[in-house]
Length: 138
Image 1 (cartoon, rainbow, N blue to C red):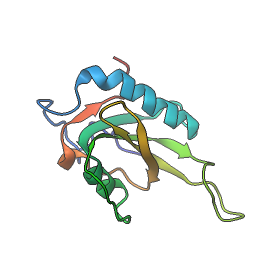
Image 2: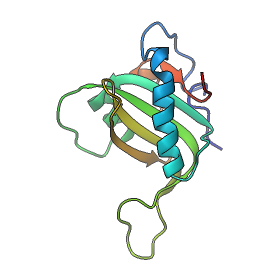
Image 3: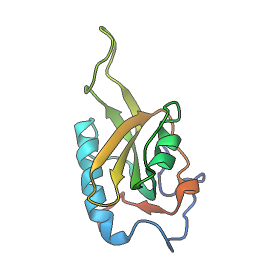
Image 4: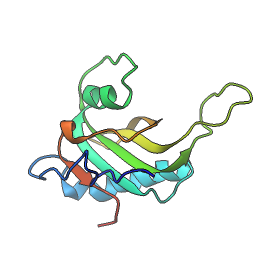
């Protein structure tokens, strides 16, 4: 069973002295729920977001990929649930990608989804900064 993004022992509950302003929470939650529904789970168990640089976020969730470009201000959103995707190409006869952790990277300015994917385990977001819990509506 997936852990809670904002309250798991590995994440703790960082102080909210810095990080994503709570006023952005409802918009980020709307974006996250849209992607979650598109990937088979309209009601994820947990949703957490952290403000960070694009390169740091991608290094955490996509560690096998060489990342270039500017380390622009971004929001990394991580959700737990039961996700599956029929987007993209899969080898003939294979099942669609599925997992319990779905992540997305959103620009801090304008909230444009830049990248997303699935992970086999919940990453520890705490090194990136304070985690904003988006699991429930404001």
